[in-house]
Length: 179
Image (cartoon, rainbow, N blue to C red; front, side, top):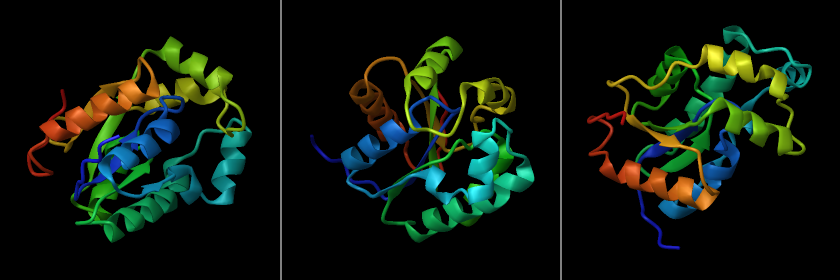
């Protein structure tokens, strides 16, 4: 598979079950940059809450977002891909405060498709019971945010190809677009 090098740090975002953990590494490989799994930045208390079916509060998320932002800042100018739900504008603002050049790939899809995918995955701590809270919290990318929306229908390879093409259409972090 041909690699396309990028200086961007890309945050693959979206509700649980959209495929961030699947698409993130594929996208990183296509872009020729390292991948970091956003779930690995969660403190144990957050994972315990989510495993128990308790939605995280903003106070729970700030240290997690700060850790992701620190990683992204360290990759500035050389590129990288990291997953993070980044559901609210304030969360994305927090990431941008740490790493101003980040761009977002918002994985989007029909709720039924996402719920079906969540029901069939194994070994993940996020129960399908939290999907409604994820959709209720979601604030899609706004026109002034550097990023693209990518539909999650199809195979992981098709989704990744759409993400690479959409990122290629961005002129840079100063020219945000949200198709």
